[in-house]
Length: 247
Image (cartoon, rainbow, N blue to C red; front, side, top):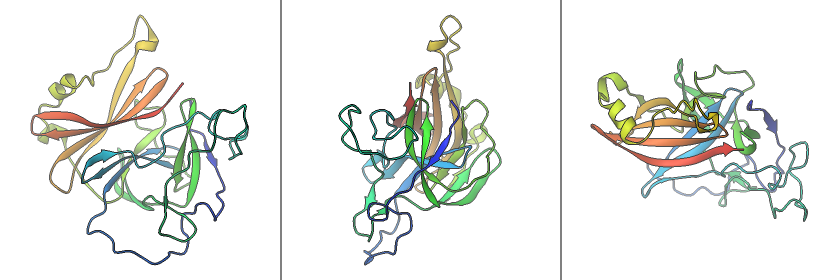
């Protein structure tokens, strides 16, 4: 399903992207690393954050629009008994700011088949389709971006600060074995299309501490997931996996 974007107006009393800041607290020396998928239509969806305690999901997971408090046009609406939801799952906000500043990076570095760290600046909050579900997204542009071959609507990935791109051929010679050991091998599903599965690697990147990660789009017949794979020499492990929506 194409990744159609819907712009959603957020009341300034509940959330905003660039409100006047309140008293600033001392910032840590280095912010946690955030990773986001970038869709071809100009939406950025965070799905991973690396902190001192490992990886977590810093952003609302995809949700069913029929139980997420949306009206038929995709706008936020009060939940009704027939909708089965008490509230719309909202993005996190910075409680220390005035007006509810969105608690996500506003500046990102974009990596794709042609970009190596292009700067992206978030300008708005969006709702984007995630298979048969919806997902909150950060919007940064209007132009259509090239699609990564093998994906449905992915243009690349973004990080909240630049990372070094790693060549798999020269620095991960055992990648094929690592993929097999982790079960990240395509399944054709010739007898049953619903059993088909495809793993599209969206690049390899060197972390500030020297480790290497690979970002993977796990595509199934009626769903998708996002994976962060940590690679240490000739060994690898799936460090983080989250749903990208489904039917």
